[in-house]
Image (cartoon, rainbow, N blue to C red; front, side, top):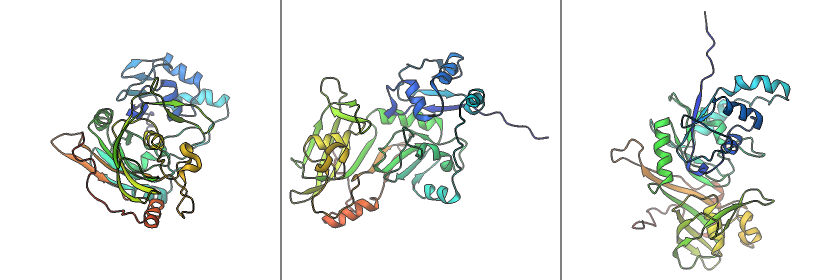
Length: 339
């Protein structure tokens, strides 16, 4: 005689990019179908907890905290019946699963590194129904737990994205991303050539509203400190440059705002530079040319092991590199010796 298994409680770890976000907004991002009233009920009854403690909708989250999530599907049924039920998300096809698994650059018992395509959102939000967070079951492989996000990349940024395969790794990796243990090297094409060829941008950033959605601006008074090292690897006269960047902090849109602030916006970044992000007369794709090229960090299990993953350039950037005469196979760390 078969028994129906009760839905299990889920635990999610707050990533470094989600630090200081209110709990209700975090929940809306991860579970857009859960209404405010229902969320309050779950909190009131202690079904949702942060680090094992009761919380409120206004609770500010910290990176590395664990959020207990009850089996929402069962709890939601009484209230969902009164309102229009949310349509079921279609299951991923075998072809979609295979395509996602083909993006894996590195995998062991604790970590998965993906080559995230440009245009794929990492998490859901307003008008975003397709996102990586909803597909993580396809990357479970032989693990007991569903993979967990430990950091993010912008929707239009491609490259190395790390996932934790268990709660232990999630906690360790989140702590690393919050500190100074992770070396993230980005490649970009810029309109114009940064001067000097190697430099440091130290400009505080603050989030602001706007008709184009979430935006960030330099704000030395109320912003959070943001630091970026950059190095020009190649250039085409004064028109364009191939630039490597190392963000020492992890603010939203940091690299895009910083490069625009010094007068050399990232190619294709119309959100922050408008037409100034285009190369007049150049036959190159009109997409953001920003790529998370390499990620270097200690292994969460320690033992002097290091994770070092490199992602090849996406097709639209390869097209531009060929057009501008840049090399797509440069190796080495342009920031070696910089701490």
